[in-house]
Picture 1 (cartoon, rainbow, N blue to C red):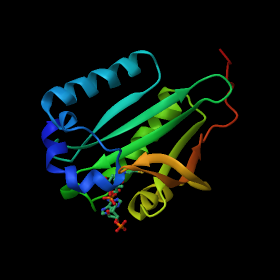
Picture 2: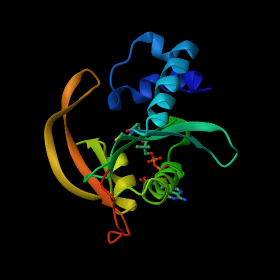
Picture 3: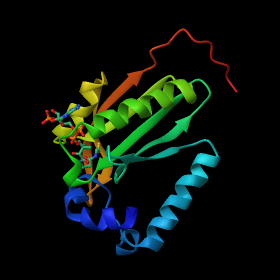
Length: 167
Ligand SMILES: CC(C)(COP(=O)(O)OP(=O)(O)OC[C@H]1O[C@@H](n2cnc3c(N)ncnc32)[C@H](O)[C@@H]1OP(=O)(O)O)[C@@H](O)C(=O)NCCC(=O)NCCS
């Protein structure tokens, strides 16, 4: 299902994602990517999630990645929706649930998000959920074949006084 969703949305997603080899858009490529994501989940560094529409159809993914413990207790969130699923609030709802997972289940302190400077749709999703825009990073991420400037956002835990054990 993921492979066919990626094939359907390859052109739509191209300006917003890293360049990927053709093999990524095949069932084998997606099995490999899902396997890698699940391995990261097992080691505690990521939580990969699927976004379903109200009818239960797969329409995108959202991932809590780069989970760092110790004094940072932070992760970075990435998401995408199929073009046909846009404009219905599904990404906003998915991010709200992912933030709940980050702060409640994972007990993290901070979620980072970064968007291309001109990715206004994504910025609207973040701002709707209270993410704070705290900086601009030049030449930050290799997207669509070039190093591009990103706007940096963060959302902090609603329970900042919780005791954290540094391990
Ligand atoms: C970024 C992306 C996920 C945003 O998708 P989206 O459809 O705009 O976001 P949502 O699903 O939250 O929908 C919000 C829109 O639906 C509307 N909407 C309708 N019903 C809604 C509801 N119940 N709740 C919230 N919004 C609703 C909102 O008004 C909003 O439209 P607006 O921004 O024009 O005002 C999507 O454009 C995408 O996948 N882009 C390519 C990949 C990408 O850029 N990923 C992010 C990298 S940082």
